[in-house]
Amino acid sequence: MAGIPAELIYRIDRIFLRPRVGGRESAPAYSEWEYRTGMALVERYPAYFGGIGGGRLLDIGCGLGGKTVVYAEKGAGALVTGVDIDPLNCAGAASFAGVRGRRIDVACGDARALPFRDGSFDFVVANDSMEHFSDPAKALGEIARVTRKGGS
Image 1 (cartoon, rainbow, N blue to C red):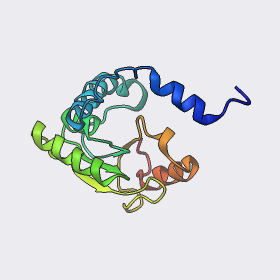
Image 2 (cartoon, rainbow, N blue to C red; image 1 turned 135 degrees about the vertical axis):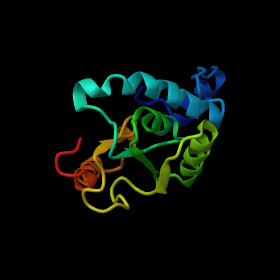
Image 3 (cartoon, one colour; image 1 turned 120 degrees about the vertical axis):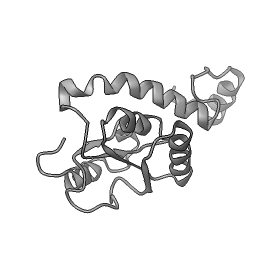
Image 4 (tube, rainbow, N blue to C red; image 1 turned 180 degrees about the vertical axis):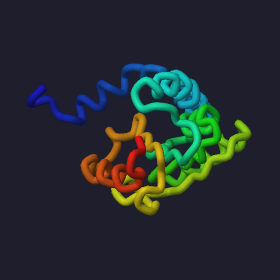
């Protein structure tokens, strides 16, 4: 495509209909999509990481809270915290948890500098979020820092 001006590509792209992606119609619809996806994923976690029950679980890049709520429901007593860099997502996650009748903590923060003490969590999840981190290596360092010794 060398030599084709970006403006022309943009104009051509605007002619074609956008694909409909389920869950993208509204924030509540996206939360529900995250929730359904999370239900399918959480069933596979024990095979790789052990159970997520009890203890403290951190969901990094929690988005609008669908998966975070799943962790609260399936965590058998786990204290669940979601963290996201976008304040609108944080508010949406808290709202979705309230609608579902689940208790989660939500914090706004950057994965490169998580607002938690060392070793604060037994289980840390960053599902569908690593590709959004501006510095994945720094985020991985933060994940290691906030995960307790022997945690997952």
